[in-house]
Image 1 (cartoon, rainbow over the protein chains, first blue to last red):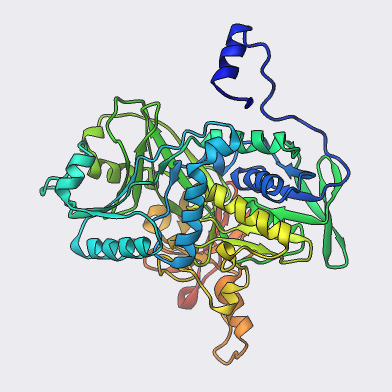
Image 2: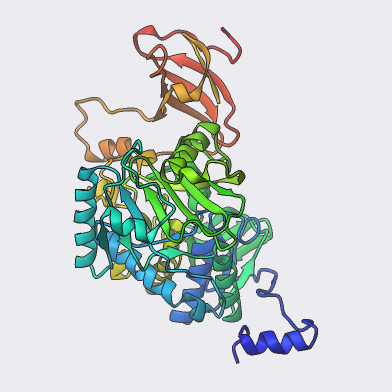
Length: 419
Length: 95
């Protein structure tokens, strides 16, 4: 019987709920492992899970500086989608979306994945043409996409302002019906639970302060809880990538850390039943199961390691929300928070072996990290286990920048804050 | 964030456009190494802490300046003009 099921809920309910075990253990670090994952965020935990499940490498430690769910896995707007234009991104994110579709069963943990659809609004005819192109590219990659006119959008999302008096009238939209949202904390807890039950040691409050080198080869890590050896060490630390890699002697990377803010309002009755993005600016909103409007927009736009931003972006994103949903004007903001994005130079990620022997790098997620969580872990685990990338992440190398093989979805060039 | 513009005094950062890491040096036009150019375009130290960065006072005096700012605390500790009007660095609070 699965650990979490209707039967276990009934059984524990009838026995006073005294038999539940912690969903992951709190082991002390062993002196050595077959593989170490630095970073207990979504990507690190997913990597450990797929190493154990797909590649039978179970003597694995995940080292987390703080506690699980402290970083970007708990600081996003929970959107999952694969509506990409370029083949490399489309195929990777579509594989990730397919993993999402079976994730609750694979983990035996309800991640509350809700395929409520992502609707990108077009606010001028040129943008609608661009969405038609993107939708066609998606369908050629086997991804669902539908171009909608305003009457269809009115049926799909009744609360939206579709009047022609709007400052930026909606002329159409691109819908990906299989996209949606998931419960972000449950993703961290679910991967931790499933990896733990396969034998992975999840070690919290364990910061990597240095790397052990034999010649050029990385053979272990120095942590706040002692030295730990492993022949393979994967780094998946998002916005902290540059700082952690500096401890391995890598001083420069094609990455800048930027702060991205997100917001949630007080709970409301159901108003928005899909994810809506605003085309005339940059804003995305969905309504959580608890009723809060969860929304976000652009980066603050300057290098930052502070998990908080400044007020101009709060104002800008809130005005964009009201441009779509004027009926939300009197709703109060409940919380705002910031996460540190590892903005890469072309807006696409890095999942690769290297840059030193024994080291593997998973980074450059920009805004796209949450939806990529299972796909990223799956590809990174494959890369670590086989010492070579899977076809899905073969293009996401660290060397592609110097080689001129960019994967620049937005076409904005080597300016990370614009991706 | 207030940026102590050497021309206009302390102004909100919303008046400025960000120009990125100011420690990245552009190679001379005679440079023929592709690696040197790629390093200039793509590779960053991305420090947590003290950062020298370009800002353009686009809604003010329209001068470019190098601002000293901490990326962990957002504390701005100085700004100096660059280019033809370069002058000594000002401290926050100077008018």
